[in-house]
Image (cartoon, rainbow, N blue to C red; front, side):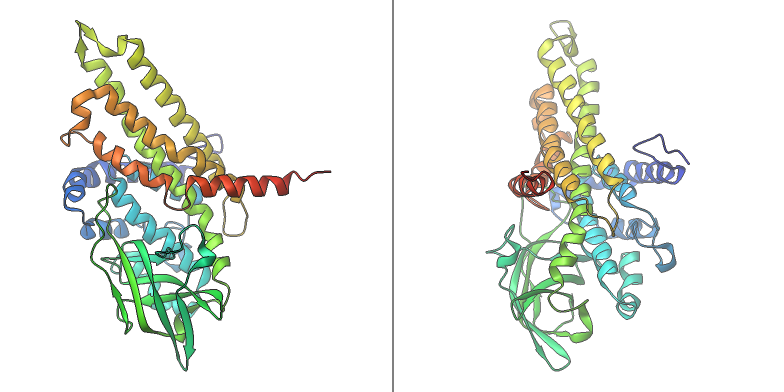
Length: 383
């Protein structure tokens, strides 16, 4: 055990990082630009992640997972995002928004039907919460579910759903008698369809679509937990999701720092390396400092996050601080590289495009500001 290392607290964490870093360098990096250009998920690579045990990183070993913790999840998202944040976003939607959330909410019978398939990657999965008229305001969702014998009948639309195009199963939230409730909806459920792929600026190595429910019949056996308990499921999963998104931003920034440092040494201007100039030194030094600060905050909060604990203040703070860092540092790297940084021949422009989503997805920056202000007022009430 190595408890003195914030980023690799145990030998198991260190070995995980080494394995994911090797996988990222040898298999993720070579395909990243091509799948960004095509705007499709590399499903074969996704299943390769399943072979490596990454799709169930937080699931107990007894149930086929890796039996690791929030820090392990942060490590995977951090390393993958150095090469392909789009692929990593698909991984997040599957491993956290579905697998981790589903495991915490499901019963033994449901796990028996789904867990093996999603842990292997045979079934790509996702989560349906956001609606055309309800994003951050989750309680305003309008998708409904009505019990009809041995089924629930769902009506409504979810939008901007990662893995919507390839996904077979989704954890979907709908209102039963006005109370938010969670269901598993399969591609085979009558009345369930998905829209065309929604084209997007960045994170193009993952797909996005609408989930459409038109008198969609979902077996009552696919109810997760009890009616009206959907908000509990949702909130319990948000903390690790927000940490993972923060880790993705850190991964983007780490890669851009590396690119800046090397370019600053190699590129000559007026007969000397450009890292001799104060303007370039500012981008490299400030970019590195903010990256390290975000990294430390994300990993420090990860130690507090478990399925049983409440670390909402920490996870909101970590994502609020870390989310802009990837975008800012990618912008710095592009400025240091000049015209070459703006060209698709180099990865910086792709990382720059990818980074913006982290300020929006999993809770906007404004939502984190609101949450933190409210929660801190509770923590420090007036006398």
